[in-house]
Image 1 (tube, rainbow over the protein chains, first blue to last red):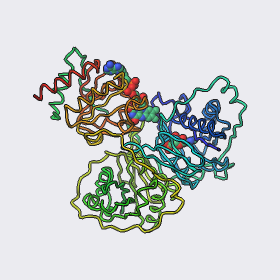
Image 2: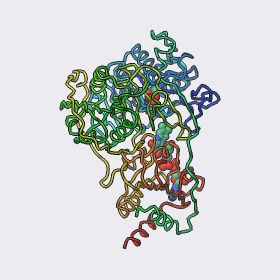
Image 3: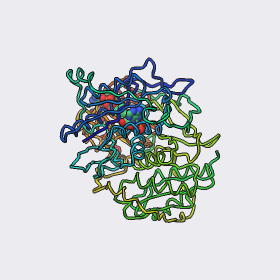
Image 4: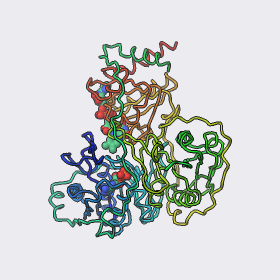
Length: 257
Length: 325
Ligand SMILES: Cc1cc2nc3c(=O)[nH]c(=O)nc-3n(C[C@H](O)[C@H](O)[C@H](O)COP(=O)(O)OP(=O)(O)OC[C@H]3O[C@@H](n4cnc5c(N)ncnc54)[C@H](O)[C@@H]3O)c2cc1C
Ligand SMILES: Nc1ncnc2c1ncn2[C@@H]1O[C@H](COP(=O)(O)O)[C@@H](O)[C@H]1O
C-alpha cells in the first residue's frame, strides 16, 4: 500500500506567534520550528498501516528550505521517502495554493491513501485536506478518531459534534486524523542515522508543472491587524477554606442559581 | 464589491437546522438585501420554517434519501457549484463544523476561489471582509476577499446571536441534480452519540469544565454532582483530559473543540492555555479554581480561587444544596 502523509513545519506552538508588521506574514525568522505535533499522529498512522499491510510511507511537505528538518524527523520515525516543495514565491500561500502544490506532488508519487492532520497548529484553517481530496478527485474522510484498512476498504470512526460516525470508504482516499488517534513513536537513534540516507526530493512548483506561486491567485489580503481587547482583571483570592462560599455568592450575584 | 446576495449553508438534522445556520442568517440579513439558504438532507425541506423565520426567503433543498447516508463534502460541493453558477451569490457562509468545513473546502477547490476560515465576524465596508482572531485571541485580523466571487467564509459557531426576523417560511426550491456515482464510494454505516443527558454544552447557561488538575478521571463525578445541583449546567473539559481518554471528545472546549458562551463558565484544574481559552473567553463571567496562583486562567477570571479543586468542589456542592433547602 502506498501511503502519502502531508507534514508541515511550524513555529514552536509553545511560543506565542507573531505577525510581521509590514507583510502581515507569520514571522519565521529567529523562531524555533518543529514538525507540527498534529502531523506526528498522521505519520504514526501511516507507519502502523504499512507495518500491518506492507507498503511504504512517503511524506510530502511544502515550506521553506529549512522545512527539511520536519521531513527528516518523519523519515527518522520510519517513513521511506520525503518530498519538500519550496519556492520564495510560495511564501504566505493560502490554503488553496497549498493544496494545489501538495496535490500535484502527491499525484506525482502515486497513492492509495493520503493522510493529513485535521488542521495545522499554526494556521488551523482545516480545509487543506478537503481541497487536496477535491483536486485529486477522491473521497475525503475527515476527523478520523481511529482508522483501519481492510483489503481495499478504509474504515474510520469519524468525529461528530455528538459522538462519532462509522464510515467506510473505497480507496484511494484522503483521511484526516485527529490528535490522540495513536501514540506517535519517538525516532530511535538508528532511525535518525538511517534518515540521512533515505531519498529526499527537493522540488519547486515548476517541477510539478505549476508556476512559481503554485498556480495561486491573490484572492485575499489582510487589511488590518490590531491587539484584541483583553478582559478586565477580576478578583483573585487564596482559598482559606471558604473559597466555595465566594463561588456560591458569585453565582447568586450573577442570578444563575 | 457590495454584497447583494448571501447564501447560508445549513446543516439539517431531524428536520431542524443547526443553531449556527440561524446565527449566520441573522448576520446575513444585516449585510445583504437577498438572503437564501441551501441544505442537503432527506428532511431538508422541513427546515424551511425555521430558516425563513430567521431571514431566508428561499431554501434550495436537496432531499434525496442518499444525503442521509453519504459523507456530505463531495456531493454537496458538486451540487453547490452548480447552484452557484446559476444563481450567483456574492458570499456563501458556512459554520465552522465538521461537515460544513468539508463542504466549504471542496467547494473552494472546485471553484478555484479562496476560503477564509475561523471567522468571528464578517463585514462589508470596502469589500467583503472576515474578522478573526489569532494566537489565542491576542490579535484581531481582518482579511478581505479580493478576487472574483463568490467569497466563501467559514464562521465559528456562537459568533452571532440568532434573532428571528418574523419572516414567513422560506420558499422551497428542490435541487434535482443527481448525486454522482463516485460519491457512493464512501458511506456512513452507523451514527453513535456519546454525550451525556442534560443541557447541551453549547446551550447551557452554566458550563463547568475540568482539566488535568482534577487528577483522576473519577473526579469528573464531582463536576457531574455540581451540574446536577445547579440544574442548568453542562460539563466540559480541556483537551488534556480528552486526549487522556477521561471523557469523550464531544465535551472538549477550545480551539479544536466547542465554543461556549454561557452566562458563567467555571474552570476547575485547567491551566488556561490559549487553545482552551479561545473556546470560552466569550463567557459573560468566568470563575477559576487552580492550585497555581500563576496559572494563566486567572488572567481571564472574574473570580479566581487559588486552591485545591478537589476540596472546593464537594464543599461547593454542599453549600448549594444548603442554600436550596
Ligand atoms: C493545535 C492545538 C489545539 C488545541 N486545542 C485545544 C482545545 O480545543 N481545548 C483545550 O482545552 N486544549 C487544547 N489544546 C491543548 C492546550 O494547549 C493545553 O495543553 C490544554 O488545554 C491543557 O489542559 P489542562 O489545563 O487540563 O492541563 P494542564 O495545562 O496540565 O493544567 C492543569 C492545571 O491544573 C492545576 N491543578 C493541579 N492540581 C490541582 C488541584 N488539585 N486543584 C486545582 N488545580 C490544580 C495546575 O496548576 C494546572 O494549572 C490544543 C493544543 C494544540 C497544540
Ligand atoms: N504546507 C504544508 N505542507 C504539508 N502539509 C500541509 C501544509 N499545510 C497544510 N498541510 C496539511 O493539511 C493539514 C491541515 O492544514 P490547514 O488546512 O492549514 O489547517 C495539516 O495538518 C497538514 O497535514
